[in-house]
Image (cartoon, rainbow, N blue to C red):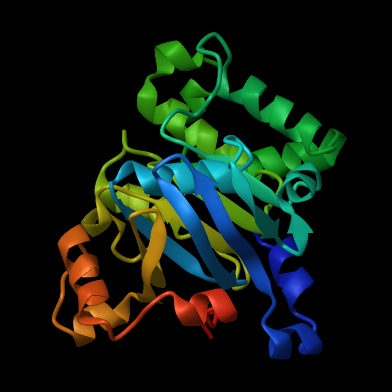
Length: 267
């Protein structure tokens, strides 16, 4: 079982439970035609599924939050730090559709490098690697095979293992683990940690059932709706782009509460 100490420890103080600090807060993000003064805030522990119209806008948002794409304007704060500082501090990790590992590298080598980058050495690194390998179900006989030979599924498992090795407080996911079947993918992405925050960009929201606590729709580059997943069922709507769009169209929810204060984290 994957342990989670850092997020829970960080957000467990009574004063912080009352304040419900924002784990991710961004304001007025502008990036081409896909983000247009995008503004929202979510509390620690939120698992947010983001879809977009156009659909690539959700991926662009995740890349901006991860520091992989520079916005033309706007502000990003993650875990109480500005975006670059949060990345340097190891508080945030990113996983995209490609694990980002050279094909000649083995999963064991990739995880060793991730441990080095996280400042882990010796037995601490070995224990962390063992823990994430167990969580992501990397087959033992694939650990020392080049990722190119082991196949896309092993490469994506290794990518997730590397992303969670340092126990990040915020995990930014962009269409991850598509080489795995839906059930296992959902199981791997239901990461423990009551205060761990996850933002998941997806073009296939129905396949994210059971992962997210909240959904958001980017429409025209802005947050058209940010609501709890169970609001869809309350209104008889499916977990789909059409269903989330219909929730936005009904006007019962809009982005204003999310921009003014963090959305409440799950209890």
